[in-house]
Image 1 (cartoon, rainbow, N blue to C red):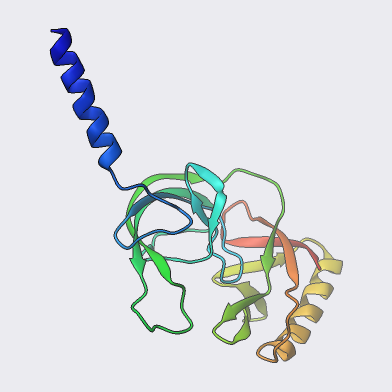
Image 2: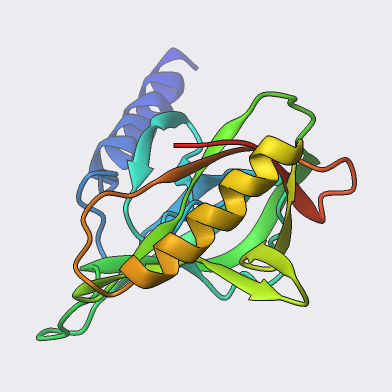
Amino acid sequence: MKTLSYVALSALLLLACSKEKVDPSNPKGGQQFELFVDHYTSGSDQKISLNGDRKISYGTYLQKFPEREPGYTYVVKAKVVEAPYGMQDAPSYWFEYEKTIRKEKYLGKDTFTLAAFAWYGEANGLVLRKENDNILYGSQILIPADNAAKISLDSAYNSWRAMAGSGYTSNPNLFVQHTSDNKGYIVYKIK
């Protein structure tokens, strides 16, 4: 019986050692990862990190994940897609959504920053837009916390529109919180 146990243990060790190691700093096409998807995006940063170590953040994107909602965090399974050889102005890889493992409403009351500009190819693009006298960040309405924040937001929006695409390198930030219904952001400060 002892011999059979040693043989089984040896076989398990051999199988474990023969597995391909997953290196999150240099993923290979087809590898699968559990990713943590944060409760917001900031500019072109989708706030994606390795679920086991949220300090490892990926500077790429997650495609085919249309159910993502601001104000919710997710743990998802995704596979690596390598960019075709010679593809310009694109990351060397990105993730393709496979399934949601967990979805949770973000309950934090802390402020976080949203970048006013996103990097698009060779120029910055303004993430904000105006619709029916409301300033939006993507699909989320920006609601000033007070009159001073409203004046600051209106002024900043007008000056940022003039800077968009001009090679402006600084990226001003909005300091915000989610609204209770997750349909917008409360803007407290712009810097």
